Amino acid sequence: MHYSTKKWIFTKISSLILIPLMVWFLLSFVSMYDRSYLEIIDFFSNKLSKILFSALIIVAFSFYVLTISEIFEDYLHDVKTKNVANKLLNFFAIVVPILTIITIYNLNL
Image: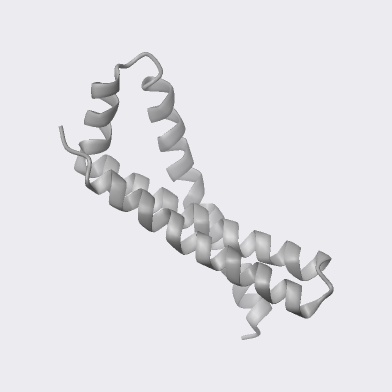
């Protein structure tokens, strides 16, 4: 299978996984609107919330990398600039979710 085909398939699969995770997060976010800080921390201290939020972050950033790298392929014509942009994109797509997940898992009441 060609690399571009794999990227296309992974983009479609990640978008399908992202839909229920986003629905869950949006419904949870709306319900947190009037809650206090401690109630929000309590929500993110719940094991199920940690797992679902971690999955959301990982899938969202994977989808983000796949789609933004396609934009780089289409609009950046200099190979060196394209490579630097993709490496920076991949770096931040790894670092930001890891830091977010570590922070969520270290929340304690």
